Length: 424
Image 1 (cartoon, rainbow, N blue to C red):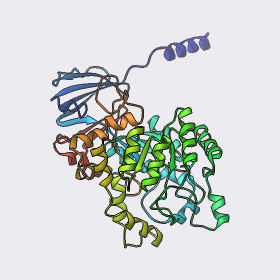
Image 2 (cartoon, one colour; image 1 turned 180 degrees about the vertical axis):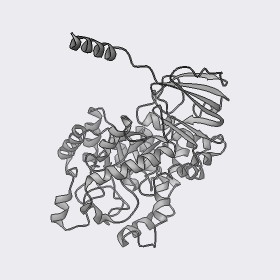
Image 3 (cartoon, rainbow, N blue to C red; image 1 turned 135 degrees about the vertical axis):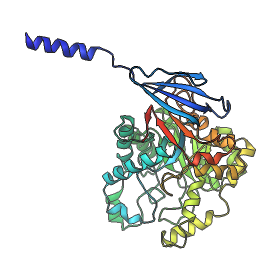
Image 4 (cartoon, rainbow, N blue to C red; image 1 turned 180 degrees about the horizontal axis):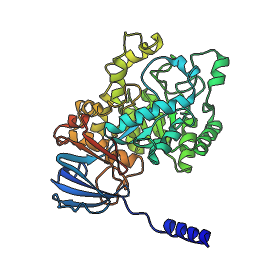
């Protein structure tokens, strides 16, 4: 009899709907998105991680019940920011040999640290642009379940690369390279399609490829196209057939042009993009993610023994070119979205990218949109994140002033809520 009563009590307890967790933010000013602009004081209600109501003016609130009142009446509330190119599992440095000495699990430890730093900087969604097999996937689950404080993570996992190219294991003897290889290098359209399917099976949210040579890898084969046209088209077509988008690390103009023609969704870096490459990008709806902070970060390490001579030479090739592609992209109508390559420089400095974008000719409004509504659209999440609206995820940050008037105010975020959770 007692067992029956206990069982019945447990059933009733689990059958009752959980009480909704509610937070009410009293905002001195709200900017729902770049196009709407400031709407003045408002009261934002958050229920179970989503925005359930927005009322103009600061309402009188009863403190009865399980309600958190968050007083931001002296602050401006804007949507949580989106960074489309980060490497949470890594920190800056040129020690390529550490790949042979540090276990992949260490990347999760480093990533947990960087996830918190990134969220505190105001970035509530990030696209993780390359990691060991499961480290970013573990972080993704940790932040989604609230175990690790941090942003929403859209994770690529290991990047697809050509054998011996940027993103592949290089810099060691061949027997060590073979032991370290993650299994995502490929040759030929068939094998490349197989590796896309493998990445999808492993849990990738997006496919990352290194379409051209790279600056920080030990191979010195230049910064132009690595994959053949047929290989890149196979990658794009296979990913799209699986409902996945493709992001391409790309520096050289002809490699950028080839990637855009193949149907790659975003060109990340785009350093030497010229008019011909940008014409193809515009025709194919390809988005530029310029990662200007990456170049600022690596240039800060020149002549300090941080990088090998091979890498230093490639860094110098980019100097004087950085940002010119963004200026031309704006002139030609190619969409520009926000990404930084954090990990190449210290995490938490992501918002410094905004001023660099403005320096290329974007307005503060355009730069702000690039990290909110435009970035959300790139992710296919424009009905969930990127603006403050009823039904959207409660990704909110507080700053001291209007970023549409002074974009650098985003460099000093005062308060963060990610998916309805306050980041302490």
